[in-house]
Length: 151
Image 1: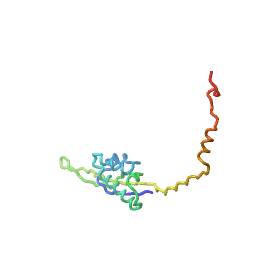
Image 2: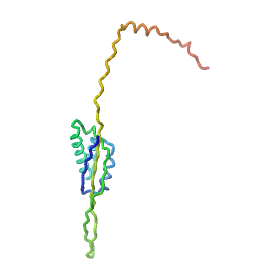
Image 3: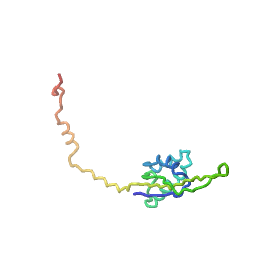
Image 4: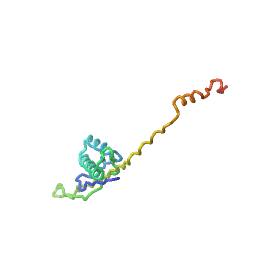
């Protein structure tokens, strides 16, 4: 089963997010959170928040889930609407620049665990243990002389 969570209108450029996001694909959520806590980048904070939100959303559907059961199936950062601002330049001029934002999407998945089948009952034999030992000793022994040798 899958759960998708979104973080929209994030004021971090998608190019900065993608550098971190690509490292998280196909990892467990617990590994991804550990990886984010070890990274010095600023972009890891919203990603960690999104990972924790995905655990919470998955637990809403299946309360028995743990973060080690969840795996990051898909994560990507798309570009959001740009905010255009002006910057003053020399000689009274001004130029425009864009503040880029992003939409972060995370999909986690887990496998439904079915109930384990009941173990089969062991077969009860009516033969005594002495009879089985006698059969093993009756087997003919192979000798070294009977084996062909290479010349």
